[in-house]
Structures are given as C-alpha cells and as structure tokens.
Amino acid sequence: MTDCSPAFSLMTGGPFYRLLLRLSLVRPPLGLLWRRVAAVLAIAWLPLPILAAIADGHATTSTLSLFLANVEGHVRLLVVLPLLLAAEIPCHRRLGVAVEQFLSRGLVADADHSRFDAAVAAALRRRDALLPELVLLALVYLSSDWLWHWRDTPGGEVWFAVVSNGGSHPTVPGVWFVLVSVPLFQFVLLRWYWRQLIWFHLLWRISRLELSLPAAHPDAAAGLGFLADSARAFVLVLLAHGALLAGRVVDHVTATGADLTAFKGDVAVMVVVLLALNLGPLCFFSPQLAEARRQGLLRYGQRAARNIPRVSNGVDPDGIDHALATVTSNYDRVQKIRMMPFSLAFAGRLAVIILLPLIPVAGAALPVGTLAMRLAKIIL
Image 1: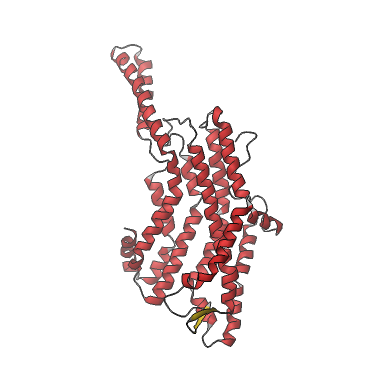
Image 2 (image 1 turned 180 degrees about the vertical axis):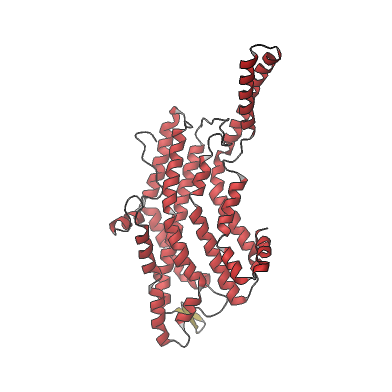
C-alpha cells in the first residue's frame, strides 16, 4: 500500500465489530476469539436446554429429549457459528496480504495508484457502514414469521413448537430460539456474505485497472497466483457450509431413513455454488491473463526468432545459446499461463474441504465396507 493508503482488513470494522470492542470481546485486531465464542454460545445455545428442561414440566412430550435429538440445531449453533467467528482471523491476515501484493509486486502502474487506493478506501467505507448491518438485522427478524415453515422437520414433532388447532405455537425454548438464537446465527452468516461481496467488488475494481502482469512469472498466473491464497482465506467459511448440510442430512436420515445417495443433488449444488462464489470473482482477471499470455508469446517468440539465425551462423555461440535458452524457458512459462489465477487441483481441494463434514455422517450411517463406494457415488 502507498503511504496514504489505509491498511486493508475486511474484518476489523463495522458496527458489530465496534460493539464487540465495547464489550471487551475482541482485542484489536482479532484477539480473544475464545471469549467471543464463549459469549455467543452462552447467548445462542446454553439457554435452550435450560428452557427445554423447564418446559418439560408443562408438556406431555419431552421437549428436552426432542431438543437433544435435533442434530442440525446443535451443528448450527455449536459448530457453524464458532467456525464463522474463527474464519475472521485467516481472512484478516490473507486478504490484507493479497491487497498489498498488487503494489509490492509492481502490478499496478504508478498512474493507477490513486485509483487503486480509491478502490481500497471505498471497500473500507462499505465495511464500516452502519446501514448494511442494520438491514441484515431487520432481515433476520422479518424472517421469524415464516421460521416454522423454513425449519419444518420430516419427523413431525419439534422441540421449538407445538401444533394445535391447525397452527404452530412456540414452546418456551422456541421463543428464545426464534428471537435470539436464529437471528444471531443468521446475522453472523449474512454479515459474512456482505463482507465477501465487498471483497468481490474490490477485486472487480482492481481488475478494471491496466495491470502490468509479468507473463513469464513462474506461478503460471502472470504474477497473480497469490489470489488463490485469498480464496484459501475462506476455507473455514466453506467448512461451515459443509457442516450445515451435514447436520441437515443427519436429521433427515434419522427421521425418514433416507439413503445418503438421495442427497447427491444437494451436495452437488452446494459444492458448485460455493466454488463459484469463492473462485468466480478471481476470474475477473481472466481477460488480462489472456492478454498477458498473448503478448508474452509474441514478445518471446520474436526474441527467439532473432536469436535462432545467430546460433545457426555461429556468432558468439556461448552467449547466444544462453540467451536462446532463457527465451525458450520464458516462452514455455508463458505458454503455461492459466486463464484463471488458480488451478483445477486447487478447486478440487476446496471441494474436498466442503465435503469433509459429510464423512463422519456417512461413516455413522453406513457400514465401513460400503462407505467408500457411497461417497464416490455422492461426489461423482
């Protein structure tokens, strides 16, 4: 970054972050993670079993038993929510480094430094804005009216609501679930989507600059290979979404006895959508990568064409041979430039991370002898 540019962090700002600072739940930049996780679980999850036990004294069925059997709910609050909080740390570290790399590698021309700084400053203003997070908060509470339909389970009885006179009414823990637990979970999740949108828009603005890409860079991405590391910053977010689906699958398999292959479509859609959302924005740079490859092949092809006759004529054979070898090496590197700043193998590794939470689900539902075959069917 230039001297006048703000240091970039997608995580250390915004109304929610400032609230955490006031509550001593974060030490700048993102210390005290354990304290944030403990506080969120104490608010979102801990009251639920306590209220469910209290409700058991006024119900014909055990609300606590139904609550304890609801795997998806526990996964959302005990696994996914902490993962989303923890994911802020790698994003803070990796995304800031990625932004700095554009300048430290000399990819941004001096004439475009002001436009680059303006794009970064605009992203920070969006991060710190009050209105977006207020809108997110409003959305999560407006959705509470149709929560019962959204959270309908195949097994009939649920711990957070009872059905009477053709309608659903919240139980004692259900009131807390609807007014506190679910809104908190949804707010944290939607806040992540907003932060990712800010990051994607920043990448788009940078991709509109006329970057100076070194075509012969050994990363096979004309110097943009570091962008794959920015996608790796969201690994815990991907893992959290995989855990969400795993919890949903467990509840359905337990309640209906459905086969795991019945969720093949859900798994495929989730993997494709998450990969598209996380890797798609990196393709903003594909036109410049294609142009860098085209120009590089022309440039090194011309140099090779000038040196080959001199080698044939025996003019300074040692020097020309070395120059031709260098040109040939650079030409080969340019030929290997990918049209995306990441490899298919990298995309495959991200897909595996998304699927990781499904492995224990499959292991619990299937005999060991058939587990590998079923997982192969789901993936393929």
